[in-house]
Amino acid sequence: MSDTLASMSRKISGAGDLESVVRSMKALAAASIGQYEKSVLALADYYRTVELGLIVCLRKREGAAEQAARPGKAAKKVGAIVFGSDQGLVGQFNDSLADFVAKALEDLPGEKKVWAVGERVHARLADAGLMPEGLFAVPTSVNAITPLVGQILVAGEAQQASGESSELYLFHNRPKAGAAYDPVSQHLLPMDETWQRRLARLPWPTKNLPEVIGCPEQTLRALVQSYLFVSLYKACAESLASENASRLAAMQRAEKNIDELLGNLNQTFRRLRQTSIDEELFDVLSGYESLSKGSNSC
Image 1 (cartoon, one colour):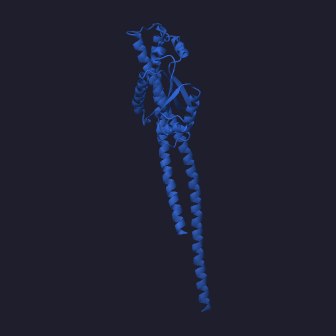
Image 2 (tube, helix red, strand yellow; image 1 turned 120 degrees about the vertical axis):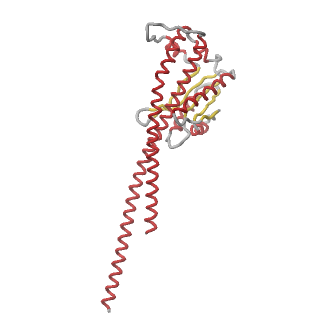
Image 3 (cartoon, rainbow, N blue to C red; image 1 turned 90 degrees about the vertical axis):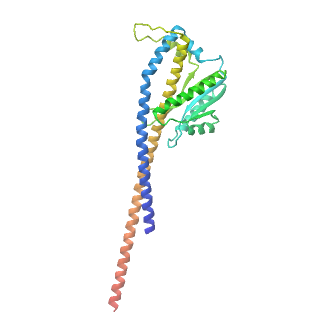
């Protein structure tokens, strides 16, 4: 019985240590969600500035953004950048995203080339029949997002420099209210003509109409690069916020399960301890009765 009680004590202690780890991870995930959401909000003014610049350029030469971004007429390849996770404990975060990517790319013509951000989603895409061409590490902080976006842009420029025309899509999870998220996609290149026309017809915020100084095409190319940077940065930050939201939900479920387990273990421990006490009292009473009978017989 003492061995059983000692074993139960070890289980209770281990469950308590695990609960402390889960609480720490839950607090870390909750704090991380806030910083990534703030980084997305901070992009609003920058994106607005890029958008205003595109308005000016597209008014001067409607359709130039498409020519600057598209090296050929017919797309021969379909490229996809998928933002996932490197770490586990995120529920169906990578599985649902990989299924969404596979379904979205299935209906698109042309050769598929996929780049994965995160080892976990890399494995899920390979299982879905989409072996990624390259793998990028997931940033561990807001400051690490910019270097990652730079690496992706360099890889994209190298792909465009190969001379093969391609379309580029972006896939990631976007956070919703609470700890939920949805997989979403964005068509980055070539830029949609409807989007260009809509942007070119937006009203200028002031009465003073701007002018492009220097080469309009160079200015347009720089603005397109900034647009790609903002889109990739936002997608990465939203993916990281969704990842931590998923991890927070997983830790909340784990904490609830551990609390229930601890309750059952403590209840079992108290029952075993009471049984052990009852057995000891029974042994004492039995010994006392035996001694009393021995004294009376004398």
